[in-house]
Structure formats: C-alpha cells, structure tokens
Length: 208
Image 1 (cartoon, one colour):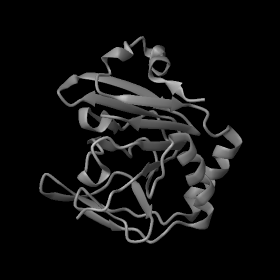
Image 2 (cartoon, one colour; image 1 turned 180 degrees about the vertical axis):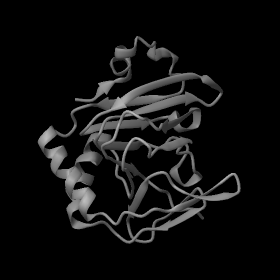
Image 3 (cartoon, rainbow, N blue to C red; image 1 turned 90 degrees about the horizontal axis):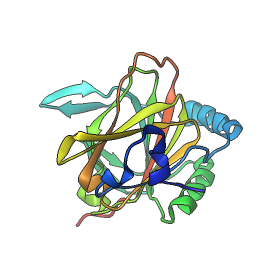
C-alpha cells in the first residue's frame, strides 16, 4: 500500500499542506529486505556502470556517482550536456519494470540508474522538467542499499524544504506538478560509507 504524503512527512512534524504543487507517494517496504538484497547485488554486478562527464557552469566535471541508462530502442534523452540513445532492456529487468509500472499506474520507456559508491557521491539540485518528459510527469524511484536523505525545495522559495530518508527497497512516486514547482537532491554525507543504487523510471515523449 502506498503511503500518502500526509503520513509520509508526519515523522518530521511538517505540515504536508505546505507542499504546494507537489504530489508524492512513498512506500518504505516496496521490496522486502531479502529481495532488495538480491536486486542490489544483481544491479551492482550486471549493469554497465559508467563515470560520465557533465558540463557545469561551463566546465566539464565527472559526475559524483556512476550511472547506467536503459531505454526502449531509439528513445533519446538529454540532460547536463549528456545525450543518450536507448538500445533495449536486459531480460532480467522486465520483472522490475512490470511491478513498478503496476504500482505507478503508467508505462515507462526509460530508466536512469545511479550508483552512489559511498556518502561522498551525490546528486545536485535539479528538477526532472525537460520538455520530453511532459508538463506533469510521473516518475518512479526505487532505492537499494544505504538509506540516503532526499531533499526537496520549492523553486519559488528555496527556504521552503522537505526531506525524507529513502530506505532500502523503498519506492517513491512523484506526480502532478512536482517537477514544475520543486527541485530535489541527494546531498553528500560524512556518515555513510556503504553504497546505494537508485533506479529512476521515466516516460520520455518523442520530440518533433
């Protein structure tokens, strides 16, 4: 059962009504621990992890994490000066894809996997608001391994923030105007030495 936003943030005593323009659902136990352990090992050993450079403020830097992009044939996606072309899905991924699509109620044609080797790997502030994702995309995010902070801030007021801990085997869904109104990040931390793998599913629309 998905946990509604009001329950999601009760642990921090935040008023979920202040999440103006965002729609979130979170299930901390989407995958049982034993199955999550198996998937974590499978993903770590069988995905084609790469350390890609990105352009930030005019400079080329290596991303502070490893990535792997998977998508339907010929699906194209571009972010941070990286251009990606889909070449199909590994057979072992289909059960994961089906169960996530059932939970989200939509189909996904692409996946960006992120491998955080330790607490020094991170994801900077951004929103998944590229035109090819549509105006109100549904994005599904599954996490394995070390629990990491997931922080959101309102685009119109960066002091307005919310955060939750993305746990091993958890599923986060972002819907509606979340990407238009909010940014999110996974910050660095000195307190974590173990790895984390995150799978982010998207539906990319062909651009004319």
